[in-house]
Length: 195
Length: 195
Image (cartoon, each protein chain N blue to C red):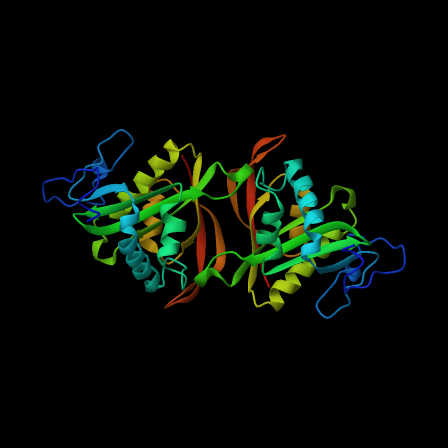
């Protein structure tokens, strides 16, 4: 049970982790304990749950680009072997996850990129904010100077608001970059934040 | 001799292919013959010359990010197996090359990206323009709807001017995205053009 075997202790209370509760956000050096959600490094035993989550979020067709090729090998190569890969769990249930890694080789390798996914059932609880904050801290600790997202779908208002609130700027806008499942082609932002 | 075995005939005259000579640019349906430069699909026999060119341009430290990992396997996997890979040769001499391919999976796969390299000895002759124009035509013919570059170094004025003259716009600007060999960290543009 991946949620039970982690090194992070879970909070005993039933308090929800709220988006507005900035003080509960994990910061470097601050305890990772928060409400009943634990963030910890992803492990191979998480593969099936991570794959199911990624497939679920991709199938919504409004945030992640993937249409095919999502399988255990993809999780292993693109997530578990990323520079960093973290899952958010409540008990044994995977609620969300992120990965980060270098966005460009060599002379561009001081900037990282990241991907986030939160289970539809767990949205609105601040889990996305906890994941992004955790990821920013981890990437900075790993030596990256900035974080950049190449494709934030312009109609994904929750993600945009979250990233903006955490200091990301729209460094660019790619016209009709994303074929949204319901809306057709929509713009996507390139977002950037120094670490 | 890779330049001699290609299917494109070379022009017999000694006329240079000039940047200002827009009428000589290859367009879809127009002959690919132009001055003494031939553009043709890259082949495995080009690997050594392509690798040498890529290493030379990368070593200049002002346009391509690569600092390591440039070897025959890189040429094979990242160039020869790209959606399209073309070399520009004068006789047997490789003067420039490009590759293009899908920039994002699935819902972003209607946009392609591309990489270009021109030999330092062959610059100012319009070879870059010929390569980009050829690439735009090839990518459109392959079904892509737009071309996007994620990292055009802001101090690479020749490339910027070329891309702008061919209809690319700066869709974004990433601060300090490229560690320039002489100038330190410089911005990079995200450039975009519909096909």
